[in-house]
Amino acid sequence: MIRDQHGLETTAASEQAVRRYDDMILHYLGLRQDTGDRLKAVFDADPEMPMALCARGYFMKLFCTPPLERKAEESLAAAQKLAAKGATDRERRHVAALGAWCRGDIAGATDAWEEILLDHPRDVLAIRLAHFTHFYLGDSGAMRDSVARVLPHWSAEQPGYGFVVGYEAFGLEETGAYAEAESAGRRAVAINGRDIWATHAVAHVMEMQGRLRDGIAWLDGLSGGWGACNNFRFHAWWHKCLFHLELEQFDAILDLYDREVRADTTTADYLDMSNAIALLWRLQEAGADVGERWVELADKAEGKIDDHIFAFHDAHYMMALSVDGRRRKADAMLDTMEAAAAHGDTTEGPIFREVGLPLCRAIAAYGRGEYGAAVDLLAPVRREVYRIGGSHAQRDLFFRLLVAAALRSGRYKLARALTAERNARNPGSAWGWKRAAAAMDGLGETAGAEAARQRAIELMA
Image (cartoon, rainbow, N blue to C red):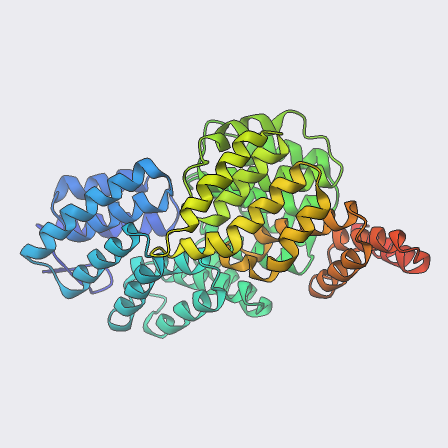
């Protein structure tokens, strides 16, 4: 047994293999694009290292694409054979977690990582993976608390400490503790200016507080350190676009879209697709001309209609198909989603059934111009949409769709109520005040509409 950089006993053929594993983990935490190469270096040193096999299986699952699901199962099978021959209890529990994930039991995998952390609170791989699945299961409180439980066992001298503080920041932001979140995020970035996860956590705070110019300056000031990051850098640029969107700086957004957010139009990665689809829809709803940019996204979405890994992803693919008028493909996707929803033995099955399907049907109805139907489908489940995962900023897309559908279908009282709710929660959003004005115009409430428009003008000034 050789101890890794956090003092955890690790089954490996050599000290070199463990040191390479340590290096790979830090690159993974930093969202570095060469993480895969670092993992290959581990296998060069030890092709039968149980934790390296688990890591490879986890990484294959993180891609959220069916062809790589099979590779995850291959890694699992190899890890299970090695664990049977000899491994630590912690390593066997990682193998079990990977097994649960491969079976579609995401909640079971998350529970397994949390159990590992009770005994090994410096197992940073378990920390990061639990952070990911809590996020995509929509449990922001669990995401916050998961990090809070382990932080007392960490210190600034330990490798990767800053990344853990960055996870703390994001969990705090998603649960509304904005001051604490910004403080933690800034501490993490002070430790490592290239920590793009912590950088984006602070951007989330500024987004939720309507601090548009602060957000633009914050991201601009740190973007020079993103060159070695993987595709998550596209998501960081997406956040910058959201600040410009509130200011209705459409030309700046389209320039960033083409140069950064969608710089690589060959990728069909779920996060890259979600970034682009969500941004184009917001732009179009705000009145911008996005040209032919929907076509390549809809083309790639067609290849995703049978995936059904997370409902969050599916809702974005449905949006691309619907906006581009591909009704037959949208209908086909709804049919296969119904089959996925019937799997009661998976974590996502009930989420597809109870939230994902109504949401995607609402998106499809909106795309057909059936705005009243979209309201009828989405309004009853709108408080359950958090269950599909994603951040508050990401899920705001679906709230905007509901408001837009209410306005377009003449349901002005509902639109007035929804915008009042949003403006109380996010008073710094000019978008919310403009839609409130539109709702009050529809109701003939001239004075209220004018006051709301004036508030939007002040925010954008």
